[in-house]
Length: 353
Image (cartoon, rainbow, N blue to C red; front, top):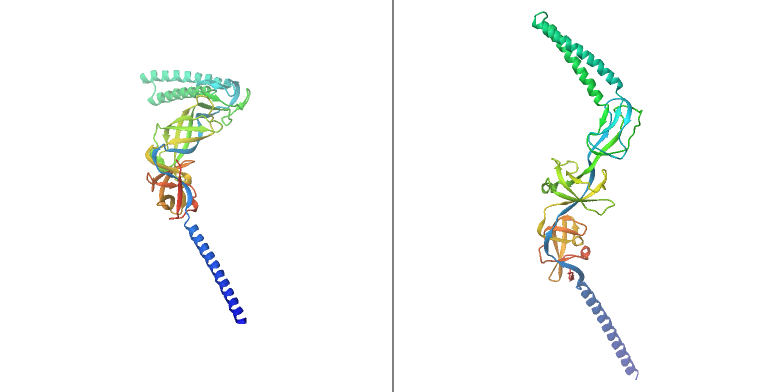
């Protein structure tokens, strides 16, 4: 009886051990199978089918607006200001007298010089008659002639100084705030006001040297200024003949009409410079590009896997980038999750229209 019970007990223990072994074995297989399945599970990404299009290649640049003509109004002679003939901030015409310096002393000097000139002229006339009669030598006539020429030059010099006492506008434009008053003793070092021609404005900007051959005189540009959504147009009229060594850029200048008077010298301009229009261009979203040590790469879908492709890219906008080589029309380009993708990783692409 005892032997029989012992046999039953051994059978129960053996059966329990076998069942436990099978449970553990099946669990291990299920875990391995689950791990294997996760490894091969494709990553869901979004993508686009690459197409060609016409690319309007605009270069975004920063520029500065300058007056077409701008000078500092100063007096060339020293003296008392006897009259001011302009209003601050007003428009003045070319040739308009802006202010007058007292010229009483200079006019007195002019009368004295004219008297001396008349006397020297009479002496020269007499000497010429005497020379014809051989009453004086050629040397004596030359002295009289030189005295007359010197007297005439002195008269002309004083007349020139008198003309400088009336300061005129060299061109039409808007004059700024004045720093003098009637009765001020003025010298050439004193700044009277600034005169600015704002009817036309210059836009100066620089482009990278690689675009130097794509810019020509007469080309049009668009620009905007801070605080306004209006797009202004300007025409390139001058290009610096050499590239700046320090910055490797080429300076360019355009001119624009300030029709509404809302453009001011000294402000910044956001310039859009149109370069050559590219037909059959491949333009892709910026988020599809992965920067790497050797350049840039993208991922395309190939038989259910991500394939890494090196690309050559150039002009970039806020949302897109121009591809020069590496992609072709019809490729399915991955546009999301590219930073975590690896070459030959299984993927499932949701193609965006």
